[in-house]
Every structure is written in structure tokens, then in C-alpha cells.
Length: 215
Image (cartoon, rainbow, N blue to C red; front, side, top):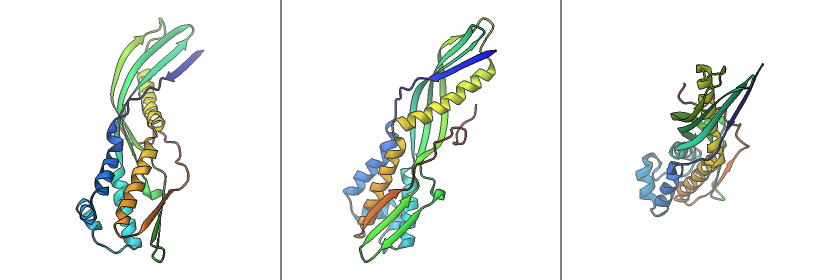
């Protein structure tokens, strides 16, 4: 009877791409309406109403969607009748985090109080792509060799580990904060304050459902 054990180490080397939107926010903060008009021309000098805010919200959601390069280690081990096969692999990949606005977006404009209230779905991992797998240590069991099915399992574990790594560095939280600050910057140009909330908790990302490469 076969007995299989799979585990993965979780040291992460996150890239700075996830914070790129924050640089935009700082740049926006130092400029006024002209900057906003250049960056998002359709959002120029327009009176704040429901349609305008919805348009800006969708533009912000596209802008803060971030692709981050990540690297991690996956250890695969399988034992059969005392014979153990093992593989240590370094996985490099890209994780895409952002908003799925189809999950529900609410916008309320209170002209009397000059407040815009926006409710967005939580940010989450939208896609995973494994770009490289490097094997650093590999052991074949005497009567339990590594087979193509094991390679498929290692690839699946690599995708799962990239998703976990993105959760460990709170990539979704940074994406939400970027969206909040950018929306506040865009709406405050019109003299309105902004309240942005994220409804509920995202469903845990299933790497099999996330877009990306296949083995």
C-alpha cells in the first residue's frame, strides 16, 4: 500500500511590483486636477455623480491590478513500501492580484454631505503563472522512481505555494489600500470625501481556478 507525503517550505522573495500603484498615488498627491485629467482623461473636470464615480471606480480597479514576481521552495516526497522518492524544487512565478467587480460594487453619492461611499468586493488572487521550476535535489526510490505523474503533482504544488506566498505577504491587502487611496485622491479633487469599504472576506483562491499556465 502506498503512502504519500507532500510538504512545501515557505520562504518568499516578493517583488516590488505590487506596490507600484502606491507610487502613482504619491505622484497624484503632489499634483492637482491636471494630473488626474492626464492620467485618466475621461475623468477630467466632471461633476461628481453616480455614473462618474462608477467609471472612476472601474478605472481604479484596472489601475491597481498588480502582477508580482515571487519565488519559493517546494519539497515533494513520496514513500512506498520503505522506498522514498524526493524532489526539492525552486519555483518562480507571477501572481496577479486585483478586484473582480462582477462580485458586486455599490456606489452612493451624498451631495448634501459631499460624501461618496463605495463598497467593493475584497481584492484576491486573480491568476497564477509558473514561469520556472529548478530542481536542486532529486532522489529516486529503489522501486519507487519519479514518474510523469509526480512531475504533474510538483507543478500543482508549485502553483498552490505561489498563492500561499501571496497570502503570506498580504498582497491583496496592499491592493485594497492602493485602491482606497487612489479613489480618495480622485474624488477629493472635486471637493468630496470618500468612504471605501470592502465587503466580506474573499473566498480562498483555488489555484486550479486561477488563470495561468498549465503543465
